[in-house]
Image 1 (cartoon, one colour):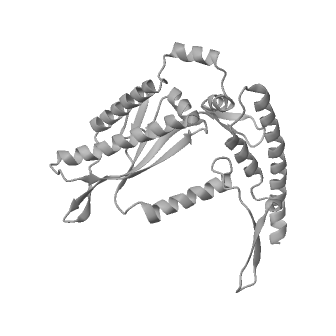
Image 2 (cartoon, helix red, strand yellow):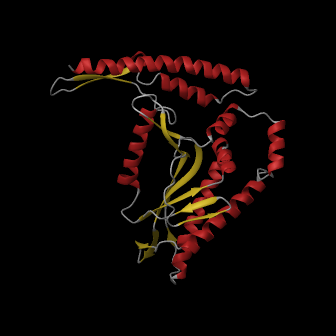
Image 3 (spheres, one colour):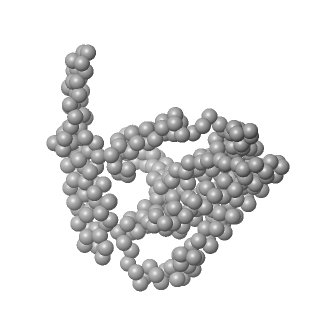
Amino acid sequence: MRACRALPHRTRRVVLRRRRCSSLADFLAHAREAYEAPLPRYVTQEFHRYLACGDFAQGFVHTRCEHCGYDLAVAFSCKVRGVCPSCAGRRMAGAAAHLVDCVLPAVPTRQYVLAVPYELSGLAATRPAVLTALSRIFWETVQRRYRRWLRSTGVLVPVETGAITGVHRAGASLNVHIHFHLLALDGVYVEEDGALRFVPAPPPTESELAGMVERIYARVLAWLRKQGLARSEDEAELDAERKPLSPMEDLVRLGMGRGELRTTGDGDGEAVHDETPRRPAAQRAVSYRRFNLHAALR
């Protein structure tokens, strides 16, 4: 009975794998013909590894229980970071468990979420240096907030805090939308008599968040100007006309459009209603020059 139930699922996987193989070949051929520069090697390698994920012909591990005699063959996985939902989900769950069990201390933690303008999101999606700079400036601004708060209480001893930043690359409708989720220890550690003591911080006020997002904007703009990336809209259009987009830049541009949720009927299949994803209620969030900072979740 177990084998009968598993057969349709395995059959579907084979059919889907064949469709992916043919689609990938067409996609790579189009990229070679339509663009001057090819796709990055790591992109094509990740797609090929994904197609080999779970394929017993690519190798497997044979396990056997010494107590009950049950044996099981497990095909090798691709372990890629982007396109494989199985390996990405397993990596996500494993990383979350590791952070909770081994990294994050048992102290209050606050989530700061930073969203950047549309154009800057597209730039960060294709240029790692921009993504790194945004993440660094975001963290240094949050860190500065906690240090300034402790100094305002009259405590002048050396302090430290910590955070983990997660980069989210998609919006609610699976469009390309780079934004940052930063988990910060909601307070600071102070050293007293050779021992560390955690001092919780109060929630950030609206004026504090406004000052933080304005500081982030100023520092990001200064960095972009230093790198020669802050241009006017007219100059950006001229650059796009003179320099053709790479395949990655073109795919990001196409993927940045906001999607649509469509509900269909059970009978005739006609659309009942269309709607764009609803935005969550903005609690303790501030915006400045299309930079948005949210810090309500603790």
